[in-house]
Length: 113
Length: 111
Image (tube, rainbow over all chains, first blue to last red):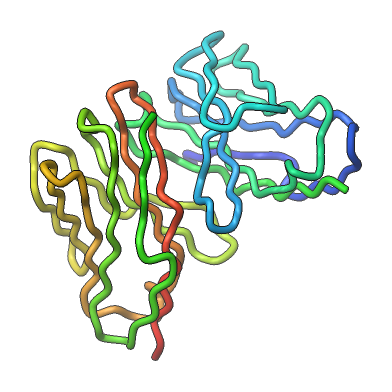
């Protein structure tokens, strides 16, 4: 089954404790991205990757890191989480960039206390 | 960068009525405009999209119109049903292949 998976689905952590949210797709998509969803603000892009070893900042990259060592995986890293990073995070993939359907993962709800 | 504004933020209609959600974008080079539906607790899913070489596209009860001159596009849902209740997001893809989303519209269809 074609899908995007994320782990964990829920995470409660404390300020400053490094964490990683994994994202994996099995559709051989070139493009992967991370969004955060906050009430009233829609989906804001954090980082995106056009291909392996190519990553770029989105609209809200501060406090986040990503890597794309393999085509299928695109982990999101918060090296020192802060309470303002409490949000719902979605990973997405598409065939090639923004001109194609985005397939979203199930979401990761992160709470930073 | 691209700026996408979406209105209204909430919309309540009676079952069977029509619903219209409007979006404006800022980058005149934008050329792809998808709409996503997000049901409560679920992930966003594409419901319809339109490219800049057409002015209107329909799929059963939903349609999207595009006015490139005015830089706005709209989602039209006819004969609304309770299962249409969800948050709807418009988006715009600019010349840099970036997709920018609007702030979302919460649609409530009252039976």
